[in-house]
Image 1: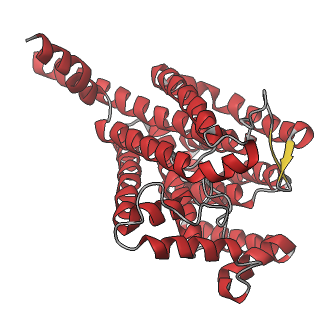
Image 2: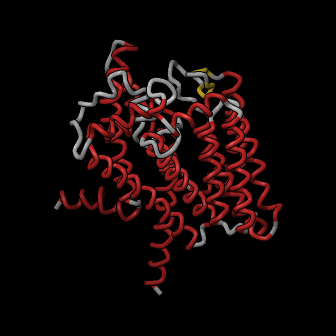
Image 3: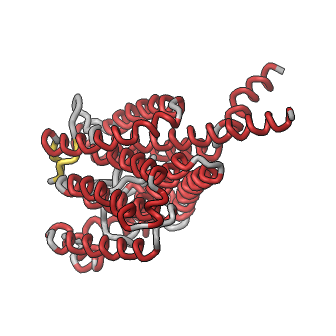
Length: 390
């Protein structure tokens, strides 16, 4: 009896109040990420720090901090995010300015604020979440204006332009593209006119092309993407090594820990190209399983967003949809870049890749999703209880 009671309290009660599939997906991705970060990072950690477990230890610390942040975020009512969306917007601007002034430069990009030897202050990661919090609040306040005239449609784009300009100074085009696509998706779901939507797509694509054309290293990435085998030891080196990892994986992989490409051949094997190592060690079956978990997580986030909108919780709905689009597009870019479907871009795979700031911020975003679902279920349960009493 006692065992059944504990089981009910810990599992059945939790699944009634929180989205169980979303929690399971997070746990699975974090688990896969921990194992694969350990596997992929050992050679480079041994070479750089004479300690094969260096990145694993750091990743463990970030995971512990993430669980603490998750508990805090789930306990915060959504009214906090509603009231704080404008202060958070300004905080994001201050962080982006701060990283340009005080940031630490790594690989030619100034994106990190070092704290105690840890590069945990990647301001653009937090800025993404803060901007989406603001955008959801704006769409609630000005929904009719967004749907009816150009002024309401342009206002959030002005704010986005400020954020984009500061992020491009780091430089970090990938984050800007993720924010742009998420903004597009949210404006479309909010009912913006189609001609405005398509005009924004054309302008955005034009600006991205201009940014690529005026930057030598970005042009090199595009050339390497278009024909990696044309310069396999230069512009196409990273993609060629990634494709070789996938090729060696076959159906069931070489076995956990048996990747050859991670042995100093594939750069950033434990961060941007961790999916290539997954493909090599776990094969096609492993890749499909991880993608199914990612898809399920995104699907649950979308369902939470649509359910919130259906129940009259517009802010919660728009914020959940923004998080879902963000996770979906970033996952697509990470996997697509490693597989040669998209140009190489330094974006992490949610909950899997090594990266402290990304893991912390995405955990907060997942905590917001769980809180939205919790409040929805609580409201529905209370309404049903009152209805049954009548």
